Length: 273
Image 1 (tube, rainbow, N blue to C red):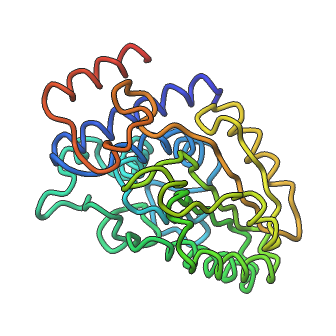
Image 2 (image 1 turned 45 degrees about the vertical axis):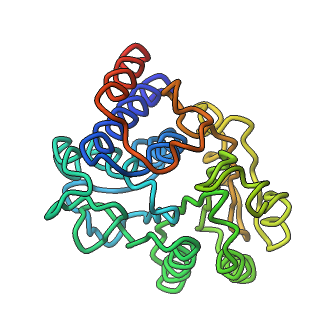
């Protein structure tokens, strides 16, 4: 797909986030919207997956370590064809396959159950190691939040990945600068992020604009050329990207839009299309 086509898909992913969180009257739109472009590139360009066979053993794996951004993952999966787009309206409903955090036992296309912050990246490291051990050739991708990397287990996983030269692993940090209680600086800054991953043996790629599809394409292209090291892509993003009243607002970390806000958000995203 071209960058313009991918931008259009990312806009549709954002609409799905708004639809889901509005229907649920809860959820996490801010960090879902910031990650929409990266998830779009992964599922529509980068990763080798088969929506008709979600459990295909040769597929690339993806772990949403920041599991609260499930609305964006669900939206990307639905648009990619893993399940009907109409199911996005069942987000967080009783009996739905789309719960507040991803569940690999219920949702087609979800490779790992996540939600306890810091733990998903350990699972991703294990997947990458398994692919190496069995000489399978598939790659593993993992999306972390910049608030999430305050968790110590993240760095244990990073140490292992670097030590074992897992060059089939790509970790992406959605660096939007905000977490549930405020800015990452106010809560427990993990800066400098790039230097930390480099110290653990990662090849680091920094994106000045992690919501720009051209930069995202260049970053993943460069990651594929790296050998002997895992890759960390540190992407500067905007929390709430694409919806004016959500952009850069920590209040939109964890709540759904009301009817009026839903209409405004969908109107803005429709204009972008």
